[in-house]
Image 1 (cartoon, rainbow, N blue to C red):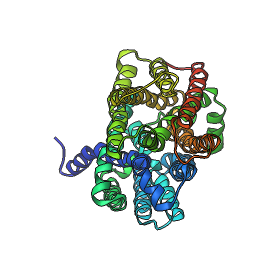
Image 2 (cartoon, one colour; image 1 turned 135 degrees about the vertical axis):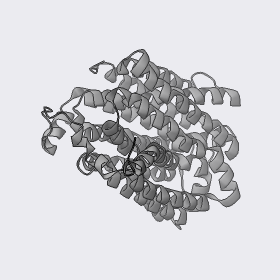
Image 3 (cartoon, rainbow, N blue to C red; image 1 turned 120 degrees about the vertical axis):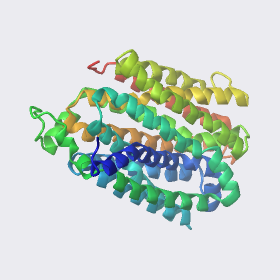
Length: 421
């Protein structure tokens, strides 16, 4: 029977996963808010397609640049202090973005949001590595990613409705308050001994128990499989988040003529598909096929097919067709989270935080690069088409085709990676 001293600890442990999941929900929310409020941002800050792309990518550049430092901090300091501190930075970013009176202040706000949310998922995965069996890692990571899609769902129709009721600025300000509260809760529910757990759970015979940063970096960067998994993460997440987070919204509204609320409803299908697939992918890898790589290859091959259907080569008309395609895009993209499980299998436990965040650096860099590249492609293609302010389908279809080719190439490269199961 638990003692009176251990009961509060047990109660706190019960809240660890929900609070981590809530922080990750806000991370996902902040990533994709610009898609629905894009017309407001264009109006308030006088943006063109390229400027909108730069503002959207600011979050992801900041997020990516802080992945390596956060990985080191997670391994050396532990998740409690790291996640709580960075989540507070994210709250400050939400306040800054909401209060922005000009483009430059909005840019700073998005940068702070990217920095602040940079530890949400990686910190959660580090907690899972410390507290749970390795055989449950894919399932747990899939579950938290599935729950995180609630954040992307909130950034579709609900955000569109709130924007019409109270405006995007007040909405983001309220989100900043909730984010700050979650940071305090997280610091309270995570234990100090969990911060030291990364060494307590390791076997004494682990040859990398005392490995220095330089040797760890050499081991990671010298692994071909690391580059194969990272390149897949770069193109898979880059294409998806650029479209979901910024460019699908303007495409549906400007080219297809949907209202912001209807476009938000269609975008919701991306999150629904991903919410369904993430735990399924983890279960298939952990329990059914007992292989990570094969399940990942199957799911992302289908994702490539979905990207091809966006290029306009195959005609796509009607709201139902877009809803179905977007749901499958989200569903098969959700298999990509198995990349974390794959890379974790190839490296010692003592390097788990560093190697996972190293992959996540390329994943988030993909988001930053593709948001900006697609903006440049759309701007150039529109200009070459006569410089008309009317954005038509060709620039978008060209951008979607670039996404398809990049994703296909990275999937072929990944197919030659090694796997332990």
